[in-house]
Length: 291
Image 1: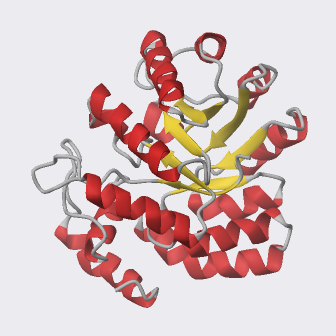
Image 2: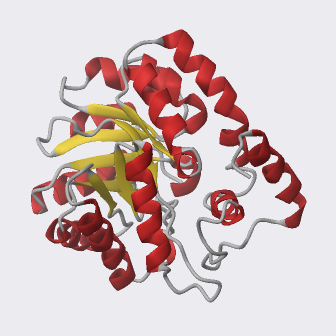
Image 3: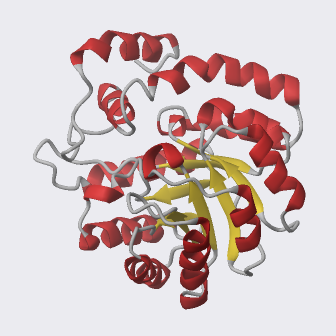
């Protein structure tokens, strides 16, 4: 059920940073029309760090209700306090999410045993499919392959979003994990290579602006059509790069604003895209036919 192109959806906001519900509704409709295979609500790209708990859960509920079972909705419910992660995960289950995405606890830098016990506790506390999320560049902690493989033995821990871009690590997990444990890319630039190794999809930032193309890319790569998948990815590479000229989700929200899909709101401490990058990102968007 969890595979293919999974958009790490932005959370639209007005210029005064209130949540923009009509824009969110339009974005979800667009992704359903464009072939996105799953929607990740309130992950890093959705600014989970700066939404209140009520806002966080309302976004999940709005998306779940609108999607109405047509594709899976994966709710970001990670936290660096285990009890908080349990609370968010239980609330996402109650809201009707199909699965939860739990980032490795950030800032407090737990040991590998601490990471294992944290995720084991959440899995035992809330009976919903759970996906681990390893992104050491943002969290300050790296969940090693050995820890992922220990956690993969827990029935409702169904996969990992691996965002390091390390193909040797991804291959080790794919080769040694149970057959029903999915490895998903969290790095657009290397997603094709991970899927060609046996990964099952891409939780994608770039899919916010070109959902149909990312869906096609994932379909080709999962089917093992390496030449076609790599050729499409080569055409998308400038977009992948443009979406990270500053910290995510700064560039992607600016791009969507230029495309007329959202307003300019973004919550501090994130800021709007620096002027020095405007021409670079605009040029890439124009070349892709998005402006």
